[in-house]
Image 1: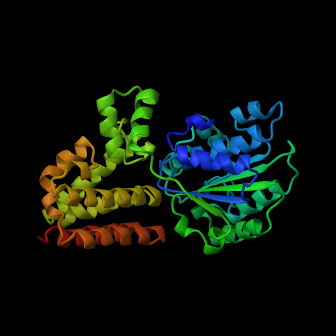
Image 2: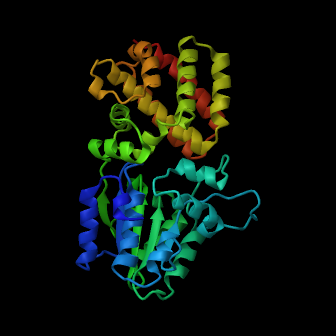
Length: 372
């Protein structure tokens, strides 16, 4: 993983290199920004720079090519598998093989992909207290290569309270020559006391021109198609790649969105109940991703009414549905509809009964959709 493998983000790359080159590396960095902007790519490239370029050793480069450097530690959300004992708290090492396989494929991946790699069904992924204990133990050991020890914590907002408090203690009394690199999609969900002990770097969405170039050079896309994909992706490389996959998850979410809106418009309560059961059966993580997609579609349909193509970020299939549907998302319902989606997402995230939440959501959509 070299800097050149990061898509765009030249300003952030230069900032990170400057920190290392001037020996002003903070003990904890917090890389924030939207999913798909390349935060993990930056974190992994910076970790490599610290461990190999700044502290060279004969074997460092070879070990980092395989992401097997003994002074590099990854911490990430995990799930509890049915095969695990009741007392066991999952830790990253339980899924080290799956993690290694994923990062060897590249530094651009989503929680959805990681959940699939772990074999998740309806579980929610968290970073447990036991994981924080294990990370503390690893970082207490002396650096084997005599340089930095680096801990990359992916999605630290997924730490439970026990884990967060233990990480806080570790940040307050960090081991010598240890650098924490936290990669967060939702930094506001972190404890304020953790955020205050990190140096925050906000990673911007990938620039349009950088996205176009990467699609052409890395994926072999023609220029016109690359420009269209880059526009709809809005700086999110994962979304750009998804649009190349006809069987992507978003296609399923679009089908669910269309079905919901048609059933709500026709006030088909029986079918809406079936729809809510289907939605609940997706599992909490996937159904919450679906609601995020719904929120985006509501926004896109509202903006579509202004007839300004530069404000539209929909795929061709999404736009085909929205040509006739968009008038039903207007100033009389767009705010309440968005709030309904966000509230449902929050309640499901807090372990409310998904079937009840989705049925209530669908019934409320009848009222809002018919408001003109």
